[in-house]
Structures are given as structure tokens and as C-alpha cells.
Length: 246
Ligand code: AMP
Image 1 (cartoon, rainbow, N blue to C red):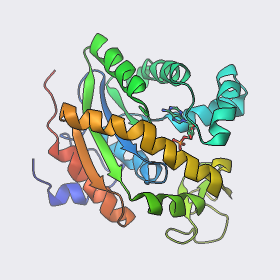
Image 2: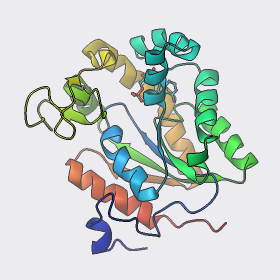
Image 3: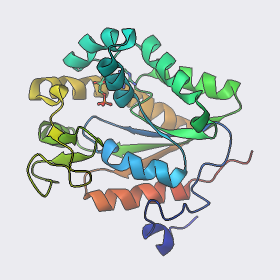
């Protein structure tokens, strides 16, 4: 399918182009990329375009920590070091989320799977229910750029919008443009932790990217360009990929 002007001009909330919305049972789109690749910035509009919930493993884990659940307490030490939370905990959390009603047609998964074992568990779960990975979008950014991006990142406490003190600053310091919420820096965005997160990504998650490339479902997007250009490239990636008949 070619990218039309209508697709480029599409704004979230204006109605989804039918060819992009996930139509089938348990069909997932994966948003893969290193920490700092800009996945969070793009995920919300992409999920709206696909007409499915945005399921971010990092957001779910932070919610568990805030609520003080046993999962949140178990995840804490790993997250603070920038290490991955053990597969068994994360897989159960994602499967529970995918079992919720709003994800019956599927979901945009952001930050999951991050290991080959997680990818295998996801494939098994989808296969059992007649679903599949429709496409895996890899937002590719050079490693040295990632650390600079994360170390300057600020997030909104209320709506999770993401800013960067140099590349994408808010109109007024410390205040979210979208909802007036207070901005904060994630503790694991400190420079030392960021370097570990990127190293962990290269070791554990690049093999996942290669796995989806071998399966023929990988779409590579250059993440080292403006937010608008990345957005257009993402739309092109999901519009080029053909929906699989039910
Ligand atoms: P993120 O917000 O995606 O950068 O995730 C923040 C932290 O949550 C990571 O550094 C990991 O400690 C943990 N985390 C998020 N997603 C996963 C996952 N799929 N597997 C293991 N740990 C994860």
C-alpha cells in the first residue's frame, strides 16, 4: 500500500484510516527500540491510529511500584539499577493486561518483549489464541545519541508526555504544555543508570529485533530525525504492512 497524503495529514482523534486499525483477534504491533529511541513520544498516537490500547511494560511496572504491589516491590531493585526485571514477572504482567477486555482485538506493545524468552512467551500466547504479531517496528537510533537524549528527558507526572531540555523543551520550564502537569526526571534517567540501560538493551534486546527480522515482520524506522519525521515514517511502516485475513 502506498502512503497517501490523507495518511500523512491524519491527526489522532479525527477517525482512523480503516486500513491501519487492527481488525482481527489478538493482533499485536510491537514498538521496539532502545531506551531513549523516542518510543514513548510516538506510542500514544500510534495506538490511537491502530485503534488499540497502548501497553507499555515500563509504565505498568512503575504503576505497580506506585501502588506498592508485590510485583512493584520485586521490580524495584532491578529498575533502579537499569537492569531488566525477570522474565517470569514481566510476562505474567503483560499476559494479564492482554487478557483485559479492551485488548481483545490486540494492542500496541511498547518496551515488550525485551528478551528472546519474552518474545517466545508472547508468540506462544498469541498462537494459542489464534493471534499473531502483525508487525514489529524498530525505532533505530545510534547508541551515542541515546544517552544524551535520556539524560535530558523530562516527563509529565499527570499525562506522561515526554520533553527534552534541548531538543523538545516545554513552553514554560517544569510545566506540561498539554495538561499543565508538573514535569519530573525519572531516577533511572541518571547518566550512570542510562549507560547500563543502553548496554542491557544491546545485549538482551537486539537479538529480539533480529528474531522479528528473520520472521519477516520487522519494519525499521530511522529514529534519529525530527519527531514529525519519525511520526510520518511510523505511519508509513504500519500502512505498508498488509493486514492478515481473519
Ligand atoms: P522503560 O520505561 O521501558 O524504559 O522501562 C523502565 C525499566 O522497567 C527498565 O529499565 C526495566 O528495568 C523495566 N522493564 C520495562 N519493560 C521491561 C521488560 N519488557 N522486561 C524486563 N524489564 C522491563
